[in-house]
Every structure is written in structure tokens, then in C-alpha cells.
Length: 150
Image (cartoon, rainbow, N blue to C red):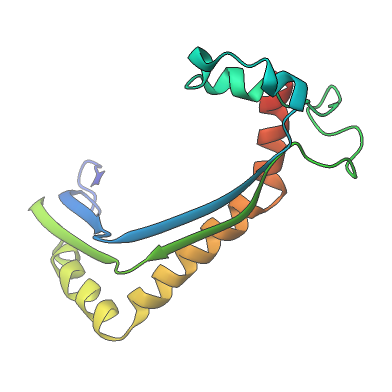
């Protein structure tokens, strides 16, 4: 982080490393796919590892010119039904390699305070909730619908 200006009191140079450590993570996802039985029976085993070929066995939804479903009530042929993320532990650290701002040297102490007061566990829980809400919501379904339609 650098702010420069000739004769400015804000003239500073801060070169620091910010590290996030998640030593143990558990991820679980439940996918729903509706595959055409006839296409699956004719599916060549040599293409089993090619996910484009597997996706071709699913009917693509009709999407409009903006990339949205024409019929939002139509059942999805590929959907993420449930997603779980568990971060057993989350720790943040910062070290200053070359800093001119006096306040930057306090960052490790601030992170220690956040850890000791339980704020980091709240932050970890919010990351888990954000991931779940984002991936189980309409945003990911829109991406999957567009992917099937390509």
C-alpha cells in the first residue's frame, strides 16, 4: 500500500503480508441432475471423464436473449440442492516487511484481539453462511442454466 505526494503528510509506503489460514475444511454438495435415459444408455464409456459429454445428456432449459429462463417454473435439469461448508478454524495474520506508517505495526495486535474476543469465529460463521446462500440461490442456478444451454 503506497500513498505518495510531494511534501504530503500522507506520503507513506507499506509492504505487508496478509495470510488467511484454514487448516481444516469440510465441503458437501448435493447435486440434482435429470439425465435423458436414452442418451445415457447410448453414452460411450470412453467419454465418461469428459463432463461436456455428460452435460449433453441433460436437456437444456429455454433461455431468452438476456440469458434468463423463459419459463422460471420449469424444473431444473442440473441444480445444486444443498451446500455445506464448515471451516473448523480460521486464523488471519499480518506481518509488515517494510512499513513507514506507524499504525500498520499495530495490525498483528488488532488481529490477536479479534481472535481472543471471538470475533474471528463470527467472521468464520458469516463466511460459511455467505457461501451457502450464494451457491444455493438463483445466481448459481442461472449460471448452470446458461452452461447447459451453450
